[in-house]
Amino acid sequence: MLMISDWIDRDDLTVFVVAGATKSFEKDTRDRLKKQADDGEFLRLEGELAEWVIARVQGHKRSDRGRSPGTKALWRAFRAIAAAQYHFREDASKKAELRDLRNRIEQLWHDSSPQPQEA
Image 1 (spheres, rainbow, N blue to C red):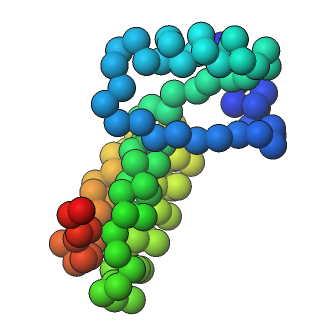
Image 2: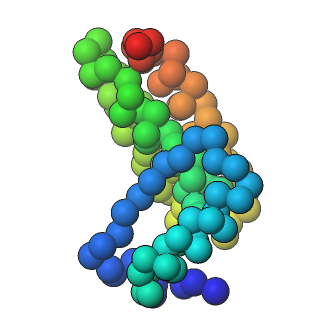
């Protein structure tokens, strides 16, 4: 079992976000990494951390033009609540309350932000 503390201090970390991966993608990626680097590690993000990364990536695709101070503040609040969810992940009542609050703020942010332009 890979422990986060074993690899978090490395200076060669890279993050990929992949859409449309097949079921065999994770195994194939692990196998390829082992062939290329003896000390390489692979970690699939799950749960709230994965949701946070995806939301962050999707947020970067939105245009900065037209963003108001209010929508910028909502995005900062969303990120702060996502961090709080991580820290309170063992507390079921806080976790549920924070998830609800984060979802409401995310909806407000989406409703208030300029939509990305289609290419």
